[in-house]
Length: 171
Image 1 (cartoon, helix red, strand yellow):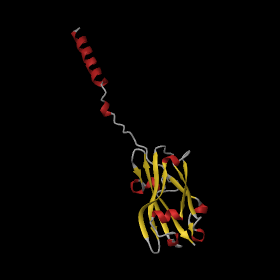
Image 2: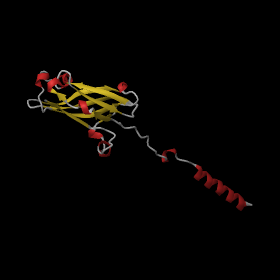
Image 3: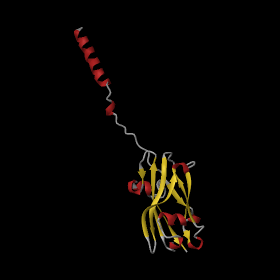
Image 4: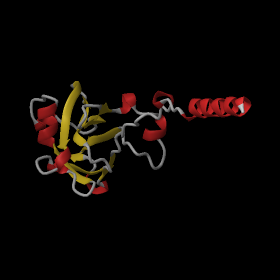
């Protein structure tokens, strides 16, 4: 009888030891959502034209599946024959501009002049380049840019993040 009690006691003891669960032992991290931002230039409006500089525009569509966008900024450089200006915000889209994952952006020559602090639209010359980086700020304060995005995200034929946008001034 004592043997049966000992066996039962040991059985309950072993069951009790193995039935305990350490909550800290199960460590599945909470993955944060990254930024998804594709920018597609309108093929018919992908450069500024000096011949019609007052009405010439760069137009693009921005696509994102994110619902936590605070803003999208195009920050970059103007490289002209006479001037080079870097690290200026040329264009900003608020998160509220995205409807069903899409927003339209329009950049005018006046926007370029203002952002890069040029003397006027007469400062623009054929061959001038505008190189921009995409910076996406999420509602939790994180900023996604080419500097902190993996090559697998920003390269390839179906990249989920358009890192750079370039256009030029044409005659």
